[in-house]
Image (tube, rainbow, N blue to C red; front, side, top):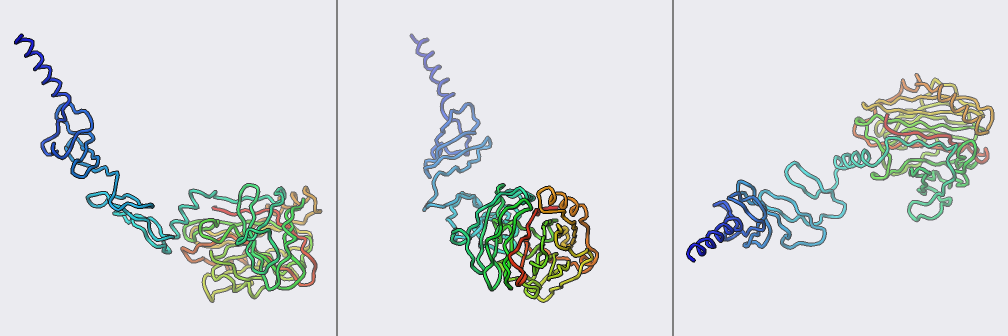
Length: 395
């Protein structure tokens, strides 16, 4: 009988040794209750902090780590962040603020120029393709809507409109001038998209991939190396007061429907294109207010009726602009004839010596967007020219 009693006492002691929480001396048994089975004296595991009514973790050295599931005065939008010694509550910040790290803590901060540039780079590099490549010879008709109302576009001076291409690229179309631009254009044809243009003075448009920080295809001078290349078919030269492609500062639209306005619109820009009834090949540049240069006559031969032209403007990682131009006569306006002329014009594309003699180095950290600018010539009839292709992106 005595041996049997001793046996059961021994069994009870063994069971206790393997089931009772064995906590290091500096982990208080009275405050912390083990939530996991402990073997030996290793304190590692999960515990319930009976003082603060929350779960904690303990490592092999007996260090207690808080794992709070609740924070005092918690509310919708709160974020839990680690302070110097405890987990703290960060309330939802002011609308429009950024959540940023300063190397030590996470804070809610109002937007600044540097934050805007960094956010732009992060968003663009992670969510945006390096290139936009649109072949308007194969691009079907797309509906155009007013930006603010989402209504089908109508003729309204300085109205901002938008459309998407089939591959999802977003474009904005700004009706430019003192008289509303005809919107009967932007219609597909075998020669490309016929773009809007009536026969009145001071009418035109501008095309971008957006001017708001998030949606825009934009580039940072001094960080990115980038380019734009656009091809046009010009059956009747005297229909245009100006056609330009290039880059301008990321900001709201400014009227630029004649040569005078083009020179002063957008204090930071670089453009190459044709101007006037003779379609003179020229460039415009500006690095800041009061530094406008142009029109600078280029070396390339001016286009004539029936030509396909290719305009290209590249900006190096150092901000140096390079203007290039190519052209070829189209044998006609069929798809095959325009495609053949485009290939010849692209093969002839070359850096223009005279335009680049006046080229500039754009100011570092300037955020710019690719743009096309057009203005109609007075009394020459509705435009029949087309945009054939549009390329823009990182080099």
